[in-house]
Image 1 (cartoon, protein in one colour):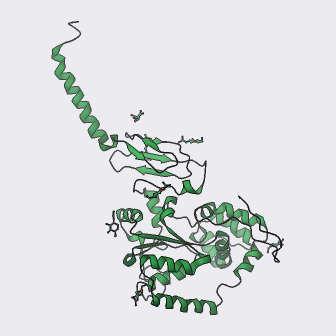
Image 2 (cartoon, rainbow, N blue to C red; image 1 turned 45 degrees about the vertical axis):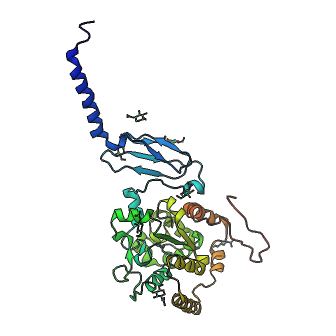
Image 3 (tube, rainbow, N blue to C red; image 1 turned 120 degrees about the horizontal axis):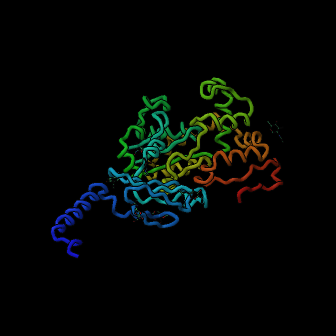
Length: 340
Ligand SMILES: *[C@@H]1O[C@H](CO)[C@@H](O)[C@H](O)[C@H]1NC(C)=O
Ligand SMILES: *[C@@H]1O[C@H](CO)[C@@H](O)[C@H](O)[C@H]1NC(C)=O
Ligand SMILES: *[C@@H]1O[C@H](CO)[C@@H](O)[C@H](O)[C@H]1NC(C)=O
Ligand SMILES: *[C@@H]1O[C@H](CO)[C@@H](O)[C@H](O)[C@H]1NC(C)=O
Ligand SMILES: *[C@@H]1O[C@H](CO)[C@@H](O)[C@H](O)[C@H]1NC(C)=O
Ligand SMILES: *[C@@H]1O[C@H](CO)[C@@H](O)[C@H](O)[C@H]1NC(C)=O
Ligand SMILES: *[C@@H]1O[C@H](CO)[C@@H](O)[C@H](O)[C@H]1NC(C)=O
């Protein structure tokens, strides 16, 4: 017993314990504290201790949480099962964005979301979804009179990509900032793309290095040749759409009024300006028989199925109906519904 225990070893033992505690504090810092991951389909307490923990949740969403200490800890959620809108749009409890998410949100200098400081608005516009209308309106409400509204270096508009990352994170999570997006039905949008860009041989050669003739040829190429005009309109991590005003082409006027009223930019002057633009548009018969065009090009269900699949996220997130167009011009046959 005597050889086994010696009082001379006590200081060493105390020293060792202190050393271990100090080491853990330095090494793991505040990442030894538990983080409560909330608002997922399952509530899960994850003790993050410097190791990446990956848990299978029953959400379709990919959530990544990164703690900004030197010992990075990550909770990542990724599964395809149980895909439904509630889960896709579930909240995130910790305001943070990964580099990839920031990149996704900021996009490029040419098609970054538009920021209106005066009205605390971030507007997520989309190519082929009324973007000329929105750019000129956002210019108007700020009293900007520049021409060439599509050119960011002269149009006077501010773009999210020019903000600091930390400001983007706080703006994205700050409810004082109105976030709005304007979208178009994917079948309509991609057809409009085909008619305007797909049949433009110059555009197709520059962007895809080949030309196409038919609509289905164009769709095949669109799957391989990336271009913002036919990219998904889901352009930020999905849970942000829950707190976003979502406008659709079919109710552009009511949405405009609703959005401008919310941010405090609606008045008679704007209304008058919009009305005059409206009549200008009508006189040019811009919205020429769009319905006929749709029926002409989507004359069977197969092509529509292709779009349903290509733009699955758009249909889910923006709640577009997956309903085949009615081919019977007399409207005798009722509409078919898929994915009921
Ligand atoms: C998301 O957060 C909001 C407000 O913070 C809350 O009202 C809502 O219930 C949350 N949704 C989910 C699915 O947890
Ligand atoms: C991290 O913490 C959890 C929960 O306390 C524990 O089960 C796990 O073994 C720890 N991992 C490491 C590498 O220490
Ligand atoms: C944890 O995740 C980071 C970032 O993805 C990665 O660099 C690192 O190798 C991971 N560590 C472990 C132990 O898996
Ligand atoms: C999650 O579950 C799926 C299906 O059960 C499996 O294929 C996948 O590897 C799991 N992922 C993780 C991180 O455990
Ligand atoms: C109407 O609103 C616009 C911004 O939308 C503003 O520039 C203008 O000064 C307002 N006019 C009046 C009379 O309040
Ligand atoms: C949210 O934004 C408003 C307006 O810019 C600002 O006054 C407020 O401090 C911000 N809140 C947070 C938590 O950053
Ligand atoms: C559908 O349209 C294509 C191309 O315009 C045409 O070749 C085909 O015959 C049409 N099919 C039907 C059933 O009308």
